[in-house]
Image (cartoon, rainbow, N blue to C red; front, side, top):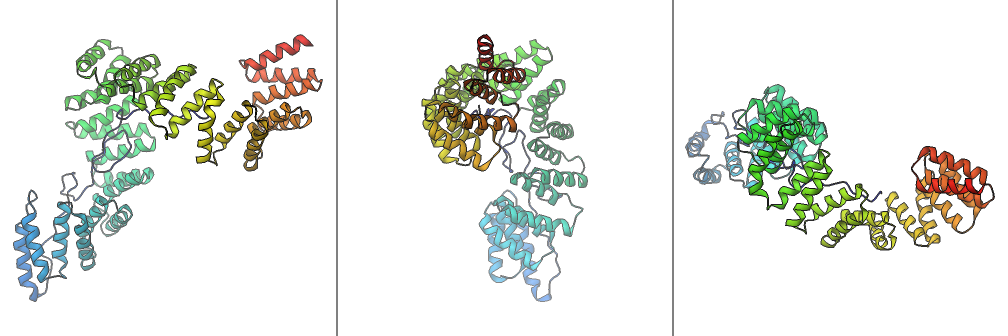
Length: 515
């Protein structure tokens, strides 16, 4: 059915909080990079002393030196007090403003840092450290377009440094422009080869773009370059697991756990990787180790269900989802995932029960409405589905598929007049829409307008020669016009397209018997 939503895999499976660049990603990104001498933890650069100054500024220079000597990364407040006092006596001094901007940046006072750094940049437009700190401040404030512009300017002044390319990569990740992010991280890696946090974020960009193979390679290189990082190992292991390269996944997932990363996704994936490589004993041991601590956690069972479903173990997924619901029967994600699993299996009645409960908990959720409607329609209960279909269409009037199903529901409830109007609205925007033509043909057929019905149904087949319902409906129309042999020929063509179509087979058998 068109209404069936995609499965939401998990709140936590294969996801994580991102350090500085927030992404809906499987992987963990490193934060912005400050300087070539930085730690990789978002450091910024204190301004350089010793810039050339006029003789009359010698006293100011001395005071700058004294104030800068007070700087301590653990407690920048004494330096801030000194530079604030100094600024009163030297309000136009770029170095003073640069220092204040840097210090405010360290204390996360971005509303103060940015104006100081902007003023400093006007005084020293080519100072790379001022430019870097201003770009960092913009980025931390969420002013990504301005940050991007500043870091691009940095690359034009000095393209040998990796930091602006790395920071641009993080900006593009935040903007979800993954192609640009990949190029930026590649450029950073050229300038600082095999730096683990660059490779890790390159992996994030690849994974976000859907290139899982390249993501796995990048994460692998990051983890091999810094083997004590549980996060890098985690990312590599989960990507190899997603690629079904289970031996490789085991190497990195074990490394992640050895470095203290024992969150649900890692444990569940490692246990499943053991099982996929026929090491059932280790899998059982691992699950036994954590099961006691997690057996009463619905999220654990939910994640296990999502993992099993992703790997094709639908029976195991169902079992896990049911355990999750026993612990929390109001969890919408679990209700949705179990409902979808049952729906795909053809168990529409129980799927509807779960979707209906999810809908009751989140009545405004478009996903909950769509899934409930899908189950109702699959059961032939158009009356229950119709109010939600009407709401959904009002919210999405340009949704062609939604309008087609709305028209079909009207027809099934006996309102062929309004059904035809809705089908024609679809045709107004898509003259060759075979499903709309088939619907119009049905409306004419119901009203015994056989000539018009035949014309519409033949047009439907013309524009979609594989639309089996149109063949079936046209056969009924021709039979009513005493052209049974033509009708049988059409049904035989339909049966070749879909041998399992029950209505086609039933009509074919009936007409041949009558002939």
